Structures are given as C-alpha cells and as structure tokens.
Amino acid sequence: GEAARGGGARGGGGGASSSVSKESGMSAGLKQSPSKPKDMQDKPLTIRPTNFAEPGSFSISAAEIKQGDPRVDPTRKEQYLSDADFQTAFGCSKADFAKLKGWRQAEAKKKAGYF
Image (cartoon, rainbow, N blue to C red; front, side, top):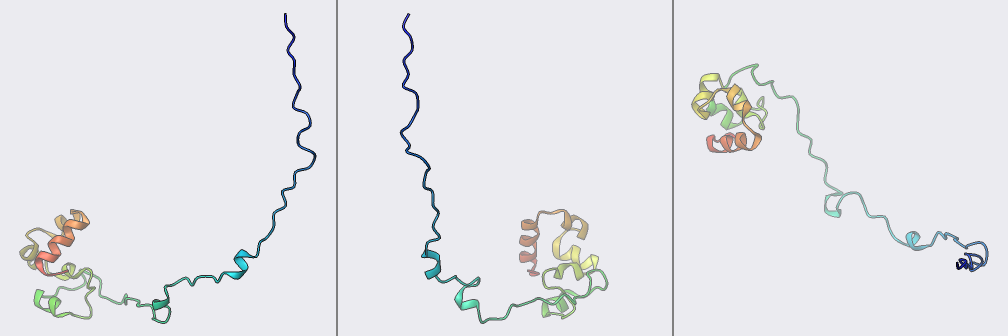
C-alpha cells in the first residue's frame, strides 16, 4: 500500500506571537457622559412623602377623598372609603377588587374617578 506522506505542521509561524495590547489614548480624549441627562442635572429629585395614614385606619367620604385629603395616599385613594362607599363606587367589595389584575383595578379607578 501507499504510505501516508505528511509534511507535518512544522514551522510556518516564525516564533513568538506578538500580541502586545496597547492602552490606546482613544478613551483618554473622550469625556465621560454624565449619569443624568443634562436637562435633569440641576433639578432636585421629587420624593413622595410616606406619612400617609394607613388605609383602613379611618374612613373618609368620597367627596373628601376627591378634594384631596393630605392624610390619603393618592395612589390608594379607594382604600380609604368605607366598605359601603367602596361597594357603591366600584360595584364590588374591597376583597374582590384586590383580586383583580392591576390594569383592571386602574381601569375601575379611572371610571370611578379615583385615579
């Protein structure tokens, strides 16, 4: 039979590879972008107060809530209604309302005027 001839994988490279990593001056000339957009840099952060009364600690009329009682968390206005007022406004109990998906709650709040 024929003998396999092979030249092998010798030579060809010429020694050590030169993989010199240079720290190029590209990043040195670029300015770091600020963490906030320029138009927001000088504005103070708005922090919502957390000193609202806990829902259920008192009941308030629908009219008082809609006028803007400072004790009422504006994101949970409906939770300060009495059970009867809640039932009238939303057509369900607070427990049933809590079971609804967030988007359905938001729609119901908008419809009832508590969003």
